[in-house]
Image 1 (cartoon, rainbow, N blue to C red):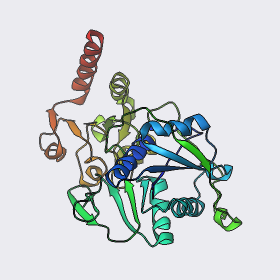
Image 2: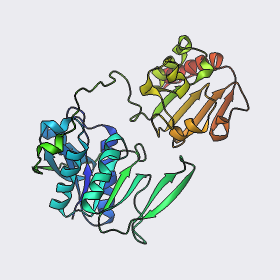
Image 3: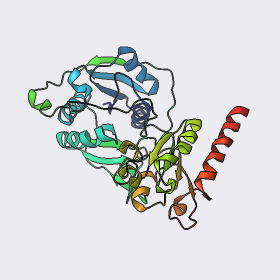
Length: 324
């Protein structure tokens, strides 16, 4: 009776959010006295799959169908359900991202399982199977007891630190038996951002709003992000004005992120923006308006002109790095 976990990959490489997810599933497995089995869909290298053992997976079930290299929710759901049935799994873990949101409900429906989306902790097994998740745009937490025989969980990214140990997973092939209907909806083209730290993976994020007054001033944020090794983000008005690309937009209608550090520059802190970032471990706000709502959610706040403060902060980071 394994714990099943979906191990997403990009061209055969497993990113931090996948390693976190595998480690999370392995932790649940340990608490339940069982093991974790990762499911890899599409083409991936044997060495990379065996390497998932360093994060807690004992076994990897691979479905080596090239059509799965791009998301097909129906086919993914069928494959994961087949893996769960093969292993007699009672718990299935998926990421709380585009893939997980599309696939987890299908898996739950196939297996007649209860589901909790957006978990932020391991299940509490002391009195049932209680999973903690954020609700009301991160303003509160709900504790959901899943009472069904089979449980499905999607985990919010960047909830737990990732640590590597010694280990190697065995790899087996799985053939779910697809038909043409499973791939009736196909991805024809994928355009990915390259050369940047993906927002979903970033532990440090520097974000800007309309307070920067125009795209010509974004260089000060780019310099700070470069020195910190951070990803860049923005508020919706900035993306809507085409100052920055839409993939950088975070908030209720954009991406939801949970970095260790979120630096908001020139962003007022409307509730729609907070909904996408209030899971951040530490929030720093720089704004010249002392009444900006964002200061109420901030761990640290600086009242002042961003054009003066951000360059000084960048220089301070440079000096710190030079002396350490």
